[in-house]
Structures are given as structure tokens and as C-alpha cells.
Length: 438
Image (cartoon, rainbow, N blue to C red; front, side, top):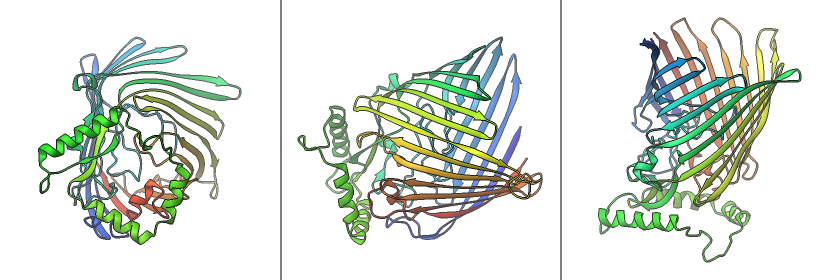
């Protein structure tokens, strides 16, 4: 068994955008991880459990990423329990992962997938591995909640009022299939993956709704209002007001022209409204995915695509790009990998929100190849439409065999409210973390 504990301090460089959010300054956090495997009969018990608690209580999470029993027999293997299945090949953001929800309360460092209960059967052949999954329980993604939470929407997000398109019985059994194969192509190699999912989406649509009783608005009125809004959404109520198809580019022009101070005041007012908020709604989705990775010496070319079909329409998500590694880049010692990717998504406003609709990613990863396993990562997402940018940086190094240090930083650069990143525009931070291993 292996274990680690981490103590970190995160410093937000600006006061929160919303009145109840924390001011600029430091916030402490504690993390732990326990992982390992124990033979039991002909198989083994696997566990990998993460936890985080911060001083504000807004990022707290306990994630059983792995807590399952596995057994192999010949070309077959079976898994039962909590499991994290990462289908993504992208360096930036994957459009393939659909079975595991994500931790959106702290989204800036990396996509953290949450363990989901499932039964997984695999068959390995000479042409690849065929897998089938039965997801036996629904785990909701984690969103930043509470007035003082960072990385939250302007409207309060109330997961306790979550609504579903599928009945409780139906959403407790989702199905997925996957094929993964490896082939030699020319002087290089090709990894190919095809996936299928049918069940309840792990991404939520944020429906406007009532999130709390106040004054004459009773709990009964609040619940009834949410039911009516859900029914209107499921009935296909258009957002274009009697067929008037809004030109999205015109809307973005208007948002660009709004006085920033006025917009800030309006957002601050909405964020403190005690009744109005966002209610998560999970719709049924059928998704087909395809990914490829072609490797030739120090070059990798990557592709991801997924097609989603829901009762409110379909949409396409894709990623194309690659990376090249320069070995012995600095004085013949380190390795520098440069990655470039393009992300596209054509979902409509009635689908779950994404901030990567037409974006370019550029990333650098330098490994010092020293005894301390020192590594430097830098990346930037650039929105081609709104010109907004998200910068990330991370440095990590071993101090001793049992301890390490890590520094992370993010910065959001937006102008106006024509980009979803604008609502976390004041949440840039720097973070220092110490970890001990056991």
C-alpha cells in the first residue's frame, strides 16, 4: 500500500467577482491519497482514493477513483466496483470521456475524473481489446457551490435540486462499448479507439430555476417552478422567441459594447439573488467516439472526435493536434515536448456549457531528467472568437525520496462577457504544495 499527504497554500491575486466570494489572499488545503492492491482468491482488490479539504469548505471532495475487484482468466478479464476509465488522448482537454464525471469545483489544474460504479468485461485478441461496461450507479459531477466559492457561476448552483430526463431506475444502468487496437503503419505505430455510450450524461445543463424559498416564495412554489421549467425544456421550448433566430455574432457584439462596470454590477446583483439560481439537469445521451494516435520517433499526431445525440438535438466535439519532443534540449540533459492542439465544439445553448468551442492550445513540458524528477509545464488556451486566454503553469520536483514540492499558477485574461471564462476572470491564483509519501 502507498499513501501520500499534501499541505498547500493557494493565493488568489484578486478579490472575487461576486460580493460573497473570498477576498484576495491565501487559503490553505489538505490532500491525501491511498492506493494499492491486495490479492483475494484468484483476483485482487484495487484501491486508489483521493481526498481534499480546504479552509473554505468549497473544494472538499472524497473520490474513490479505484475501489474494485479484478480477475483475469485466459484472454478475458472482469472488473467490478468503482473505476475511472480515461478514454482521452488529448494533452489539453478530452472530448471522449463520457462515463466518469469531473470535479468542476477546482477545474484549472487538470480534469479530475470521479470514480463510478461499474462492471467491466474485456476480451483481448490479436486485433485489439474489446470492452463492455455496465454502469450500475450515477455519480454527479462536483460543482463549486456556496456564495464564497471560487470558480462558480454567477447564479447559485444547487445540486440538491438536480433533475433528470431518465427515471431513477433507468439512470442506474448505463451501457458502453470500446474497441482499442494497435497497428504498425509505415515506420510508425497507430493506436485507434472506437467507443459507444448510451445513458445519462455526466454533464449537466444549467436550467434557470428556484434554489431557495424567500419571502412569499415558499418551498412548494419553488419546486413547482422548477418542474414547469423542466417540462418546458423537455418539450423543446425554443430560446429564439417565436421563431426569431438570433444572430449569435450580433449578440457577441452587444456583449462587447456593454460598459464593464455596469456588467459587473449586474452580475454581482444576480449572484446575491436568494431565489434565482441554476438547477442541474441531466439528459440522456447517445455518444459515438473515435480517437487515433500516430507515433513516429519523437512525433505524435492525435485526433479525438465524438458525436452526441440528445432529445434537444445533436452536436459534434473534436480535437486535432500533436506534439514533438526535442531530446537533449538543454545542455544535452533535458527533454522538451511542444504540443499544439485545436478544439472545436458546435453544441447549442440548450446543451451543457463548454468553454472550449473554437480554441487553440499551445503547451510546453520540460523534463530536467535529474535525480529529483524536476518537471516544468506551461500552457495557454486561446479562444479564437472572443480572444480570451487561459494560462497555466506547473513546476514539480522531489526534495527527498519521501517528499516533493509543487508550484501551480493560472491566469484568466478576458474582455467583456462574451466568453464563459469572464465569470471566473478574478479567480487567477498561485499555489504552493508540499507532499510526503509513505
